[in-house]
Image (cartoon, rainbow, N blue to C red; front, top):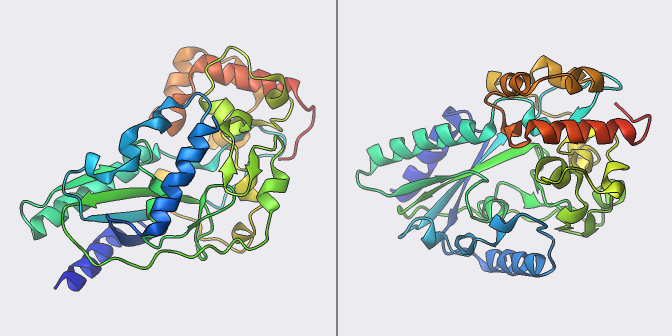
Amino acid sequence: MQQQLAQAVKEQALALGFDLVGIASAQGSPRVQLRTAALQRWLAAGHQAEMAWMQDPRRLDLQQLLPGVQSVIAVGLNYYVDAERQPGSLKVARYGWGRDYHRLIDGRLRALGRWLEQQHPGVGWRVCVDSAPMLDKAWAEEAGLGWIGKHSNLINREWGSWLLIGHLLTTLELPADAPAQSDCGACQACIEACPTAAISEPFVVDARRCIAFHTIENRAEELPEEIAASLEGWVAGCDICQDVCPWNQKPLHSNPDPDLQPRSWWLNLQAEEALSWSDATWDEKLRASALRRIKPQMWRRNIRSARQGKAAFSP
């Protein structure tokens, strides 16, 4: 009976537009314990920089997110779109091209939760996107969606690493899938490609040196000189470590979902024009975007830094 329900849950998740779905027991395997210990070492080393929310104790215990939780339903959404930036344009991470993925995943998972409640009235559930305090990639790995690569992103054999993930916690006990097995091997492409050496060792990303952190989370008036000099055109996030990953080199599935299609100006973002935009223009252009987290003054700072850094950068 539970096996049939688990299969029905997966079919419903796919029908809602997700590309991957798996189930993990909330008790977790020893691997989750290892991932939890790794987080503690990462925090102790100060790799979180100014992201104090990474120390939220709820991240270590699912019961604090949903008392009585028995299962974790993990979903993956392929956000790769077969589109490229114009040569010489400023660079924005692919996850920010379309509609805010937090809203997108949250809405679809809530629909899945309501469907689950219809099947089992009274069942408890809670939606978690990456803004929730949980080890989201570790639980996606535990549910079999993929493995955590040396660049800290989730990788799936078929879909590569262009995956947005979310979770539905539930008090319903469902049969768990096998955890994914790591398949990075001896590859160090992501480590070698990072222009700021932010991947200090395999599976360890030091936010203090990460372009994505500094362009999105750093609230300072100016970026550190060594970061500004290494932006290579990136002004909102960074995809370098994913661009070079061998699992992303094969032909990839381009998602036709309208919510994931890039706004045209993302693909031809020019410094002079963008710097002339008023705060109201920024507000309009970034409406319903995950990149609204970058405030107008931060956008201008990033663009000035990118323009004053290397005179030429790859498209």
